[in-house]
Amino acid sequence: MLNNYNYFITLAEEKNISRAAERLFISHQCLSKYLKNLEQEYRVTFFERSPRLKLTVAGEAMLNMLRQVQFLERNLESQLDDIRQSRRGIIRLGTTEGRYRILFPDLLSQFKKIYPDVLLEVSYATSEQLTESVLKNELDIVLMNKSFVNRSQLTVQPLLDERIYLVISDNMLEQYFPERYPECRELFAAEGADLKMFQHVPFILNRKSFNSRIMLDSYLQAHNLHLNCVMELTQLDLHFMMSARDYAASFCWSMYIPLIRRMNRADPERHLNVFPVKGVEALNHMVLVTQEGKILPEYGRELIEVIKRNCAGFEK
Image 1 (tube, rainbow, N blue to C red):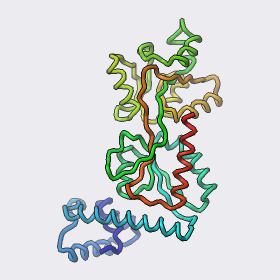
Image 2: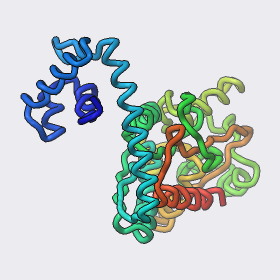
Image 3: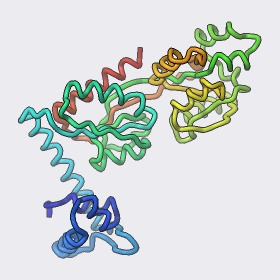
Image 4: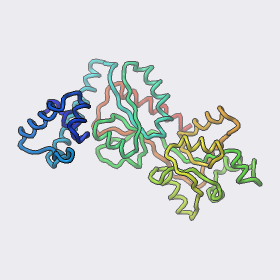
């Protein structure tokens, strides 16, 4: 039964024999025969066949068990890699889209210098999708917001506590605070940007399901304030590009400040100011997530240390 258990997992994921066979590099006939023999062996139906494959109750039970087998097998592989002192292997790492472009270029380069023969597969998705991917053994390590970690089967390690900042160009400050500019730059930098004073300023905001927006909306509602949202975008680096073009102000987490500084150095004429937001004390907790009981090989543990060192730099 345990032979070729990935066949069953792939069938459950693809919900189609032809697509699953193509992904597994086997024939449709071979995969169909595998499923038929498995159901005959256990005298149950694992999949409803029409209009597409759908797991039955028995199929769900089988899938859950086989994912545990897959998890244990990968733990064994990690332990054997350590015994062999292997410097080859694969680590699957995921995070959200915005963090992907901030963290991974340096991380990939640094890790390759330490383990040139380890393949580091990186991907991005929503927090909900990342959680599911860890539980399905599709990802080994995930970097995400702690507020979205809601499963008891997950282990969490703290990485970075971030504050939220207001991002606005010099030109927009002069336009919307003509009587206070340029002195207001020093004032907002020292005392924080009071959102009560920015209600007439246009803003690009994240979508309502994202943590930065949830935090902001909670603060605004509690203080009976309203921001002039002229656009919603999920890609935070695009927020800053638009802010640099005087389209609207925006917000960022601590991790994005080095990016904004690089933008300022590259194009001083489009200088962006980054101000703490006065009165917003809530923090964004970035964490590293693995499946509970996950055993990583030495190169996986070293990857975690590299991630922690990089994240520690953002706290400065």
